[in-house]
Length: 340
Ligand SMILES: Cc1cc2nc3c(=O)[nH]c(=O)nc-3n(C[C@H](O)[C@H](O)[C@H](O)COP(=O)(O)O)c2cc1C
View 1 (cartoon, rainbow, N blue to C red):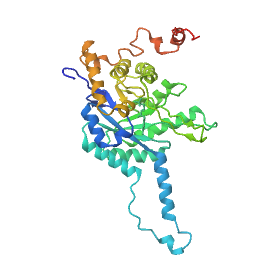
View 2 (cartoon, rainbow, N blue to C red; view 1 turned 90 degrees about the horizontal axis):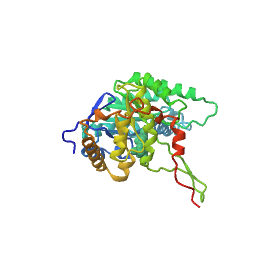
View 3 (cartoon, helix red, strand yellow; view 1 turned 45 degrees about the vertical axis):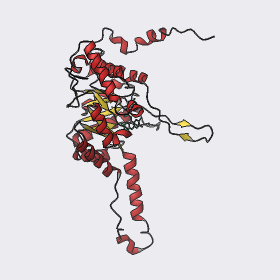
């Protein structure tokens, strides 16, 4: 149900038919699923990330395979084994972009998960050449080196973004973590370096410990709606920092139509979903879109553009609600007595 309503939104300079976007996850790695998501109404899809570590690992393994035996025979130094052309992660990713673009007409965002500058410029160019409509650069890192300062790491990330920006002509979004001392400052530096949009926020996966085997085990839990509150706060604040030409995407905790409405109200241009689709399947998007539409009708809005940002920090009657001033009020709002 979207008759008479204008759900279009601008994201990274692209016009999307809906503000509901499928964010990166295993399911967007299958063009058939992206087709189903398109049929269910998403405005765009972000492919799962191409990871630098995987590419580097493959290159090391390939070199090892090609060099095997060369230390034993002099003539082997001139010998290049007739290995079949191996399909690398990059080849597979390029093929994924091409197949997905051929299957759907919504914009397709390719995602790079990088740590070093040189490689990313090369891969970003490849993904652009394969037909991606935009690139999302995921700055997911856990810096454990006590000799590295926050400023050094931020400087590296800003120059990584500037290098990728200079290398491609399609729009660039940056997906970042919420863990910066001055999130608004870093966000502005990223935008000044050429990010057309920010995706807020990466959800960090914490390893767990198995008390029987004493192994450190990877643990991935799908999100819950309450996790949206962190992106909501920062999108409300950042919407007031940036003009409408900087796109803001909410990710983490978008499950329901009401979650999408909240994200738009605080100023997001799009609301992204992964966990909800993994849990419920692509058709979940239909119900979310229905709720968005019925809410718009009930509240007498004709378009997504009309409601976007109505509750951002600058539009809010109580701008302090998004900052520390609300901390004490929040703590004092706890009303439940201690159980006996
Ligand atoms: C199984 C799984 C795989 C994911 N893979 C990626 C990925 O490759 N690249 C990326 O940027 N985010 C990835 N994400 C993160 C999602 O894109 C999303 O930002 C995060 O799950 C928060 O959104 P949600 O609450 O809608 O799940 C993944 C999430 C899950 C659950």
